[in-house]
Length: 443
Image 1: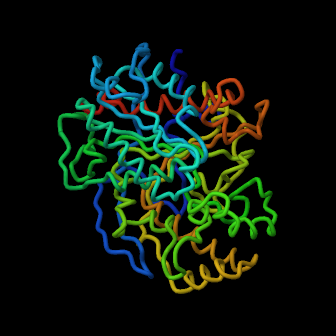
Image 2: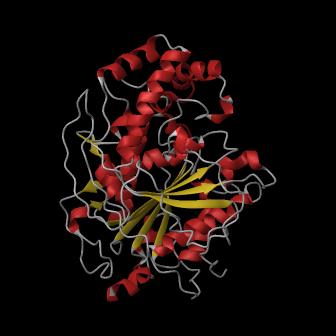
């Protein structure tokens, strides 16, 4: 399939760059270097500051050459990696969501192989299949990290690493990269000679150079709050009852998603994951990637709301365009949000009191107060980094209410409305390849 033109249908701009958000809530746009400092987690301040390393988004378009259709399959045996002939140097880890398995990536993986070529080792994670997703984000993240290390150790040719995760898998991946992060290792300066941001200061993931971190409909802010878990229809009573029931249904993962995990005085896991703390350098690990990209369903997703999947506040949700970008059906908008300077998230005494009330005697008022505090603090932490946000709308598809599965084409025959999203992800990944930076050498 030939590459689609990279021109927005409405505004005539590159859909992989998008317009810049204007306003006081966002920092200046442009190249920025990465530096970080960290401090231990505490009850009042679980995070440390970390500036963004994101490179300039004014990148050249793609060439028109055909891509090889031969690449490696999933890591099904040691022989499949030990006898590599094409010697892939870029590991792309696919991470599925709740109660799912590697088979959910069948269509997506096949398309990525066809479009990306032989430089990629595409590996669909299998360490957290089905009910293992109930054991907690931290437990699943550690298993994923161990799994990635096994793949890396058996494939000596690997130099770069990217993650592509769907739904809950995005939170597993965020935890895993913090486990795998090392800021003391030096990157091979010749691996990306034309990358102006190539620097050992960025750190490495599993000993490899981090390139792209992409999530599809991931609840980055949890699922507590109005319409964050859309199948509850925004009904206050249902949302009130969901929090205490969730741990019964989906175990530790449920309490973590509803931000009620741990002792009242301890910040919930998702807040800690918006910071650098003793548990992990979560922000530094995310910041080490050249790009961080969020794909979010603007509507019809019954599992994950638009706000949490795109890391936005309620007042930042504007009516999305109705028209798809040229060549990418149902992808309706792409925007880059630059980093915002912040001291990072905090867990003030009033948050601890609100958490205790939400745990012991949940009511519409106290759970709403607690969520509002936590949501703002998580956003403050995560917006220290720049993010590219891609809005997806299946309003014109035959089965729009399958948006959560459409966005990654869980099944080719039932959820193929997401084929345009798959194409957009593949082309986004290709944009980060070394050849994409060649013209920068003359700058």
